[in-house]
Length: 130
Image (cartoon, rainbow, N blue to C red; front, side, top):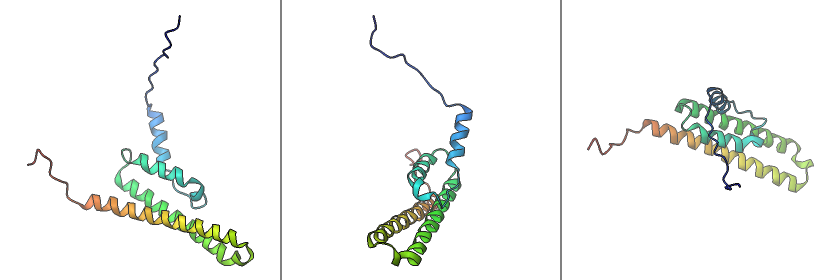
């Protein structure tokens, strides 16, 4: 008769798996796919905190900000050159996309500044130091 309990299975990260994870975290950001992959880039950023050196995280954020800027500039150029031939709602939707990607670009720059300031501030005294 079954006790209704599942068999316990334990998994461990392999060196190969950890290497693949670190490689994924360090992939460059491509301007042509940044819009479709923005959620994935934010997930990567979240997972970097305990896996990558601060310099690598800052480089990623700079790469992300640059890709977002290039993408937004491309859409802005498209609207500027073809906007008159597009339906009004299409132009408005494209303008929304530009605003969202510019806001994400500003967030990346702000995150860089925050992390850089954290590196520059002196360490707080611990209770053992008191």
